[in-house]
Length: 376
Image (tube, rainbow, N blue to C red; front, side, top):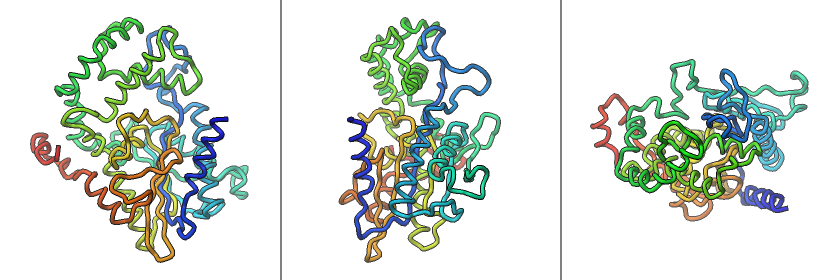
């Protein structure tokens, strides 16, 4: 019953567009659905059974497909049925879908679009299904072309520098010291033949988190308190939430996508929108990173779950004024720097000016020079 009330509350909140406002642009960003792990636990330590073979790690599961299909149906209800932002049938001038270059994000985008345009919405197509083009950059293991929207670290040496050196900062070393007894205990419990540091927590967090999404229990030897501590360490590392590099790589990685969002907003206001609804299929780092860069992701927030989603809606009032509203998981996000739940265009641009990073520091400059040019 609680879940039903949560769904109803989310629906009420996400439908809260003023009667005198019209949605003219929607930008949605979602994390891919549940997937197989990127890391494996020692034999006999994982209560879940995962497929074995080439390219089986990090793949979307049936659970993940259902999550994104359900999200796509939600978007159809909001943007087709309720607000008539886009047509009931696919129109190439209205929809734009952009995905990172992994199998799980591309498949998640397809699943979401199948919910947005379900079988029957394209009577002339194969069995009534509407194929939707997915724009995807390549950060796949068999290519060398980097993904500049979703994986800025592949194109910016300074981001790689930050990620490499954060673990050696005095601030992170204090984290290592604080959790050293716990990590030694984890090594014994999991039967690891190597020393594991807090910085390497994802090798434990990831397979357990994937298992929980599939309905598997925690390993029998692990307590709920243990899992809470593992999750806490993972949150600390997720955006380097400590030391002089605090959130810096997150801001650098999120700058390209937020600048692209702002371009879509500018084009819509100018009267020549590239699309009326733009969908981005990304990762937990993308969802959390965008909100963190906008100063709307508290340190205490749990990891963005599989299928989590953010929406930006640009609305226009009767007097021609434009407003921006952000949602996360169906709830309005109050952005610091805005006078209310909606931001004026001036307030939005002010937030971006304060939050985004000048990526010219990535342009073939030495690491020392780049470090001197960033406001730490």
